[in-house]
Image 1 (tube, rainbow, N blue to C red):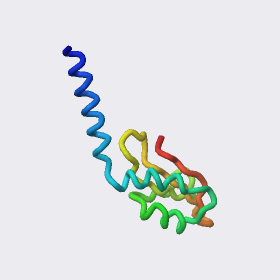
Image 2 (cartoon, rainbow, N blue to C red):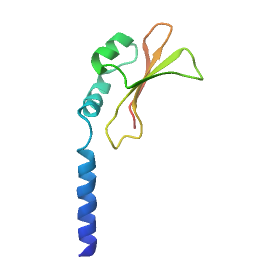
Image 3 (cartoon, one colour):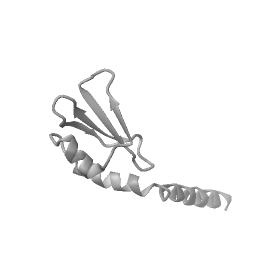
Length: 96
């Protein structure tokens, strides 16, 4: 009986954490699937909005990394890598 109660509380707590995701993170998880290699940075921002953080890659100064909030359960931010020379999407990191 004690095991069942602990299991129930664990599941309940887990569900509660998932429901705490921000609306922005949930929207980003839908919108990141619309991003494609070859899109311009302007097209990305039209779909995703302004990034939470923008980083110039230290190992590759020709790349800009746009970071977007992802829901809990993902291991990382959603990342869109942009070429600085022509402002197009090189690759997409889906946070998994």
